[in-house]
Amino acid sequence: MGLPHVQAPSEGESQAAEMVRRGVAYAAASQDYDSLLFGSPILVRNLSITGRRKVPRQDRYVLVEPEEIRLDETLRSLNLTREQLVMLGLLVGTDFNEGINKVGPKTALKIVSGIKTLDDLKKFVHAKYGSTAGLGNGEEIEEIFNVFIKPNVSEVTEPKFNKMNGEGLMKLLCSEHDFAEERVQRVINEVDRIQKEKGGQKKLGDWF
Image 1: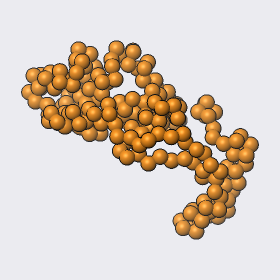
Image 2 (image 1 turned 180 degrees about the vertical axis):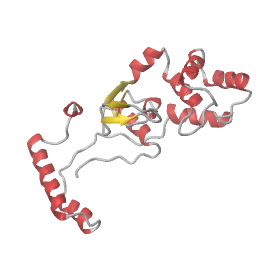
Image 3 (image 1 turned 135 degrees about the vertical axis):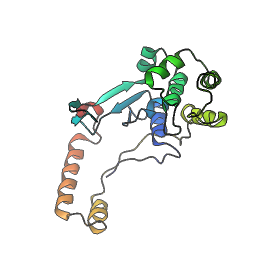
Image 4 (image 1 turned 60 degrees about the vertical axis):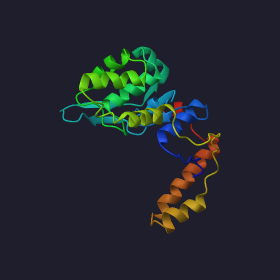
């Protein structure tokens, strides 16, 4: 389809965050807040799941709309550094650790508001909860912390959008995966028409 892609050596959110920091992408689009822990200046949520959605375990619905979250505004409103935000994440749990039992976002915010370093956090948790269970041992905490603060990312280059390869798409979808030729060709024709009229990629503002 002519869309550029990047092979992330580690977490996709960390690579996206680096691309936003370097100015080659406007925002990281994800449902997870990890992008903020990885340092993405802007996170866009609900880009593809807008509409009414049922609230889990409740008999009510909410209207889900695209949401733009700016890291600098978030940190300023919470009076936190990015390192403290990562420590908050460690307390409530991330993809890499369970978090401290019964410590939710509000309690975690109170804890990290008075803590400046990871060593201070480890000492506090050990004194308060008897161990660092949920954070991992000392080396694991450091490693997880650095996953967010010093992520493993590939070199960032300007993404290049190319012309759609209609013939290749037909072969992939229809010959190899049995999609209906008529439907695929109709979409290819429409995408080709839009690309010619608008000259390529839509801006984020075009979706609102």
